[in-house]
Image 1: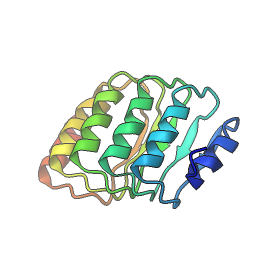
Image 2: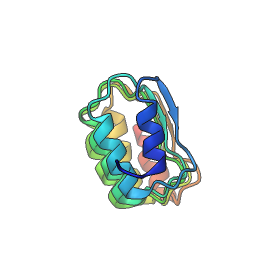
Image 3: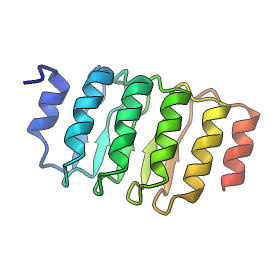
Image 4: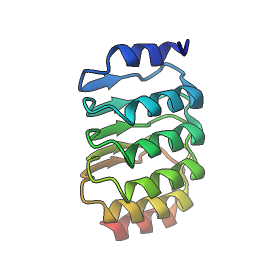
Length: 150
């Protein structure tokens, strides 16, 4: 038994389509445990992990899911203190994912360097239709990267 409360809640709900685990403070360790379960799950299509202190390591764990999971269409990683390393991992896995339609990265620590990599991946995505990068640390260069993507 993992003895990580949010993960125990998740495991109990592995058969539902929409799971909201925001504000549980699971951290990177919880994200890794959750990612392992999502690698084999074929039911969950929407997952909200907002405000869980995932950080870059937790974001990287969730990014790995995107290269394998074929049912997840909506993912919220908002308010998780994700910076450039997490964004880089996510950008790489977005290149191979063809199912994710919605991505919420609102209120993280993303900067212009993260924007450039994310914009390139989003531009080549065949499935993403909605993204939220509001309330990050973007400047003029991020605006140019996202503008060129559109």
